[in-house]
Length: 343
Length: 262
Image (cartoon, rainbow over all chains, first blue to last red; front, side, top):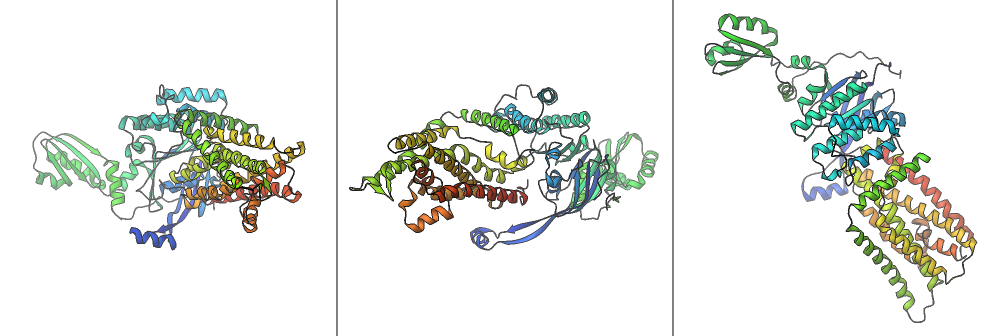
């Protein structure tokens, strides 16, 4: 395998992972039967995924539950060994888990915690300082920055078990980034947090990314996380990469077209509006309808000519709607061609 | 090396602070220690309380007491250093926090073996040492005997750790393994008696299959100068083989680890 050029932080080629899973029939009898005779079969969780990430790039990893997002993140961090294909992260092969590699990455999982439950977060930070051999001056400087950006003042000395979920997540992030990793794997970092906490987690990740030019791979159920942080989106479905591009072109992939919003000076009937597009809605003098992407300008011109329009805006459909459509329908989705660097 | 010593110091500081959070637990731990020593002493009291019994398996009362002392000391070692760490392995596999351990740039086996201490059970160690000193004061003990006993007992501690590690490592495949430590405790209970007190098949089992004999009987024999040279050589050898074997087993388990999916 050729080593990736220095401007590639993450290089993934045809990455695959299959698991053996055990099946159990429901009920007591099923349990007994499965205790003595386990039926198992192979499940392919990741079926050949390829992409490159540049240093400093932030990508959102989207896909329905069980699509293979977490499995891919775990292979890139070195926790799982791929059953096929190759991955290189920061110039290393993750599965070897070499010390210089581990010092450059971090994995944050919103549903799991590494902080010591019975002690203040500060004690966990000191443990990590020792494990990662962080020099005292750098530790102090990083702590000052993190305390500032995350608003950790006053919660660092409280036992972790007494912290709220949001406070705990902030401390988890600080613990995970204390060694200033260059590649961040964030798996659902805002899960269960309220809107304000989600926002401060996002602000922190954005700040860290800019300050240290770190590469970030983020999975989330909250579209706001992705739209706020990532310029590039990877969509994975049933173990395959089905989309790789920016947010705008993800919206274009949806057949739903664009949303046209109108402010009218004269009321209009729903039937009349429906002649100009689909899913028409009328609410007093406000109206909206969906227009095929290719006909947006023609339809808009007709609307402006035919009706007494005070204001007209054209918008992409909300990303939630796009995702619902992507994963709701089984329509084939075009995949961006990949230029393979390594053979 | 100095780095790992520094880590031990920091881990120890953290785990002791964590335990000081729960002060009421201390009373429970002291009662548990007293319970352990009570049961062990009751065992030999019953044996030697039979009219006309002066020795069991060739052991006088004070020699048997010496075995009980090593048993308690080992019990203390397990309660303070081994079990608090090993019982967390299964938990970490089940909750997925093992992911974090494996991604730390330090040896993962070192990490899982040194993170926790149950300082409250230090009383077991003190009781064990007390019993050994008391029993030895009735027996002829040479300086050489103490030296050999120290080497034998050090090997014994390595053996104990390795068995626990190997049993706990099965958690990577079976996830729930409390019964594994029960298994160890059940068999280890035999260690409160000199192995020579058991019929020969049992004695062979406790020496060659589960090396309990090396943990309590061999150090006691070494202290009183009754140890055969063969056993004296075998003990460190068994320890070394188990250490390498359990390490390979651990590596294998980590290699096949498929962490709990979130």
